[in-house]
Length: 333
Image 1 (cartoon, rainbow, N blue to C red):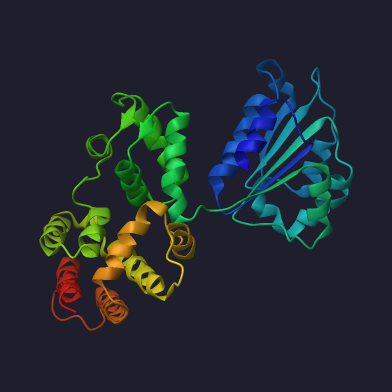
Image 2: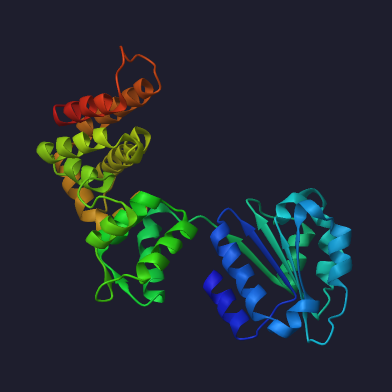
């Protein structure tokens, strides 16, 4: 885990090579920044810390720099950012990885790509250094990540507030962290509430996809159409494609729920890849939408998606018109 690597670095347990790879840039950046700030003192950094970019150098130049000795310090730090640009020549690192310079901390930020686990380079880095694959969090993991990050900033966050934030921002962890840092300055009584989210981030606590999903689950037509009307007045903040995606997720989950023999909270959360917080809501939605009805609604969603792309839609039909029509059909299927 990234947290363990960061903890070791802060405790001065330093490896000669850090190969940070994968799709989630946030954790790569966090580890790299920690190395940049923690390994050397400010006085040592001038002569012993170098940051270069993969699209501006080559492997021969990197290895040459890595083999140099530090000046007036125990270690030198060489950070290669955007190292994915070197993917075609990365195998040239193999011999260095087998015998890395012990006084150099060589860091590769290899974003959006991973090394082939079958190759010798992968195995050599595993032996001599730290090889970390940074994976995207699943959607159901984001709310708990938000909660833990808030705790690290010294405050708590109410369940609805963290789900609002997750729904609005998605899995952009850097942006979530930035928003939480802002909230840290104005948090009231050590707790983030939906009202604080609404006032300071621009998310309506009552008119959002989270609440629309709840209205559909509970078959609350009045609430659903009230939210859809609000969406029509604020179309840029509430794109139809996002709402349809959430509906697909909801009704696909309902279909899977109906097929499960083990409907315990832990198993439903695991099979549907949802937060345990939502299991009770899913069970209620499954009661309101039997299997055949949920299957028909999936067809309605596909039809609305096609129409939103201009296929089969008549006249100047807006996305909000399509959403209203869809909601009507869902409640009358």
